[in-house]
Length: 112
Image 1 (cartoon, rainbow, N blue to C red):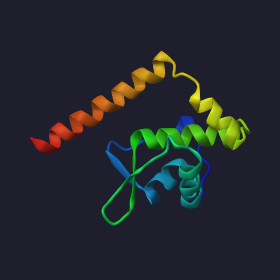
Image 2 (image 1 turned 90 degrees about the horizontal axis):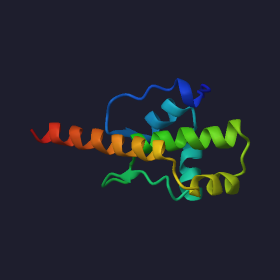
Image 3 (image 1 turned 90 degrees about the vertical axis):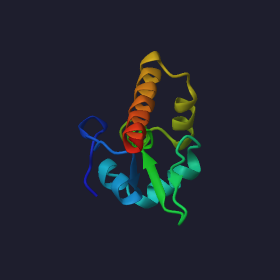
Image 4 (image 1 turned 60 degrees about the horizontal axis):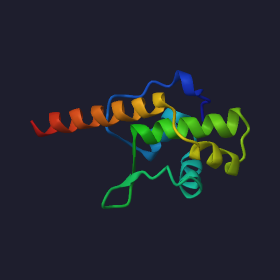
């Protein structure tokens, strides 16, 4: 799997990504993504009626953040958990609100 840093990933403009797409975008193997779901409560992709994982943009961004913490910063799983529990900065909140806004606009466009 190709190595990708968190700064050089450009996400396509879509609401959901299948596990293979998430793996390709982040450079993290699907089995690692499934393992991280068990280790990090923040990573909870949606599921189709058939049980297929559907990752949102924020899930992909979290995967990239986890990859940075675990692979580049050499955090342990527990260290990464503690790091993620720290209060979010205003910038992170602003980014989360922007993502929600994009999703709402996309939903509105689907309905119109």
